[in-house]
Length: 211
Image 1 (cartoon, one colour):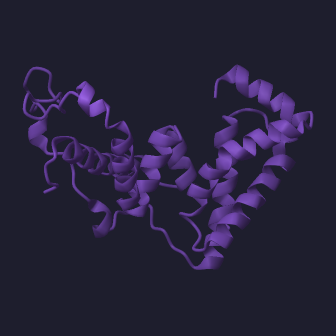
Image 2 (cartoon, rainbow, N blue to C red; image 1 turned 120 degrees about the vertical axis):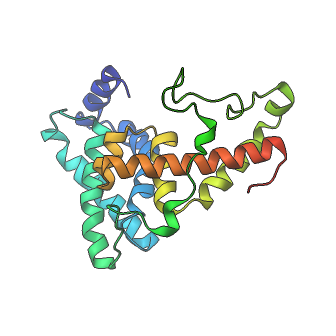
């Protein structure tokens, strides 16, 4: 959200415009539910966390100074509330470490130019993703379904980080702040999740098998 748009939204919210709240709740509730589900076990608890967050956001708006984006501020409130509910739910999500089940695959280093080569770190001729022709673009609906299926198949934390970054558009700093994960672990989870999605997409487009 651009700064001018956010200032306008804040004015509408602080003036008590009902439609502004409806728009915000509609736009952000799916994101809030996705974040809350990482801290609590049941959907009932997710609903309680989101509801309590919206109440806290409404109450806190008069004191909101805009030192961070409205979304970041709202998600920080949510994560604090969700962590408290998580303690009651006895759900421990150790974001500070990577479990063996979540390590997943990393990108094949042979797809990138080695250290010391010209254009170090760029794709090699063999590793470069294939270009999509018109016939492949015609399959965009199936491609989308393939990606959604692959996203849902990711380990929970990889799926959450990829969704927050690539679907909801959060910055790496926002993800680290909201989930309480280190910058290094955020990068690892995002990379490994994206590799799995890229592999699923390439397998579908080429008609090959995922090995």
